[in-house]
Image 1 (cartoon, rainbow, N blue to C red):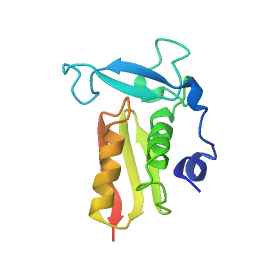
Image 2 (image 1 turned 45 degrees about the horizontal axis):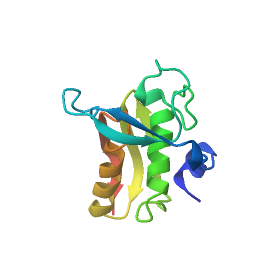
Image 3 (image 1 turned 90 degrees about the vertical axis):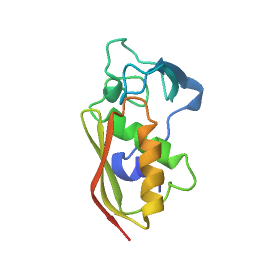
Amino acid sequence: MGLLQKLFNLGKPDKSKETTVQAPPASNPSAPAQSYSVPAAPQKPDIPPERLGLNGEYDDSGLAKRVALALDENPSTADFERLWIAQTGSTVVFKGEIPSQADLDRVVGIARGVYGAKDVKTTEVKVG
């Protein structure tokens, strides 16, 4: 079972609705724009990036769900049974346990690359 299913009881969205968003990295708004693949175009142009849901709708947990989806789509990060994902605004918060520091570093790298993620916190993750 993937993280999206485990944490949010959701299946993967339809890839045919996927779109590309051009935006600077959330961690450095003055940097050049990058391309981010998001599950669907925003239904309203004023939805903040961290609130963009899997189908383009406003979703309070949109960023956490998109991080879960990104981890599920990567074979090396798809099966962490004891890892939990939350968000506080545009900060991704990981909790739980993960087998190794290399796994945690990989998860953090993927989360940082998700559209709308400004920061990633791992203080509540036990490694090992």
